Image 1 (tube, rainbow, N blue to C red):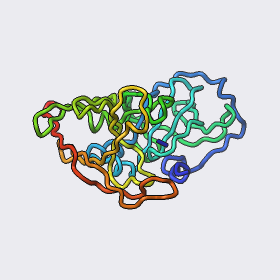
Image 2: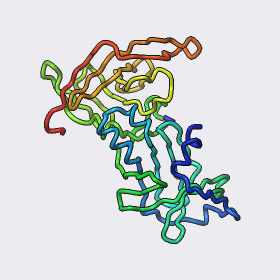
Image 3: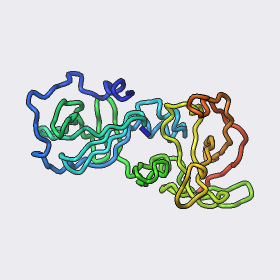
Image 4: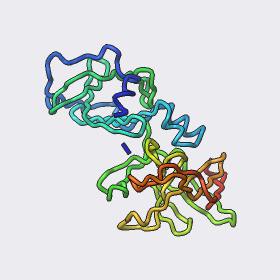
Length: 264
């Protein structure tokens, strides 16, 4: 999940980019930040809820910012749910917060101004971001060495579903799944800027511990109101260089699940 950012950054950056005339030691600043937390662009959230497609939502003004508790902490910025950068820091200049690029623990360049609209909404340039409180988990694709923020689990999948024969299937916001053919975890794909990502996809995992690549099964998915369909994937073009499928399409419908009314 992971240099597109610099090409897109002008959407948020202050037009008169300011280079610091004197480098300031970040360690000299240790002020508490009242807007600490995880922020996601309102456009992304609205698209995800309306279209129910993370692939489409990523194509819009999708931006994620993790703001630390204090000004000497690192600020992480992810543009388009593709590349993330943590060489930023936030300072307060009078009554306004600023995001600065840093090098060698020193301020280098003013990148963005932050306008605080409310305790749950901020604005960078023309982009409005909403504060969210998603579950955080160790990413099993990186052997648990990397923490990931589970956004789609909370906003799109979470809830209880019924199969065609009346069995209950539960998708939890922490990435666990119960009641679906012995699968333990599910992981929706956030980033579609790669080969073989022509349809919305998720990973289902048939191992509870010590997860290996052989335990992962990729499925395409579609939502139609409260109906979730999971499909096998057909490979249309195989990339012999990367040894991956370059173009995929939805194949056989494997599961059809109906979300129960108490989850609406």
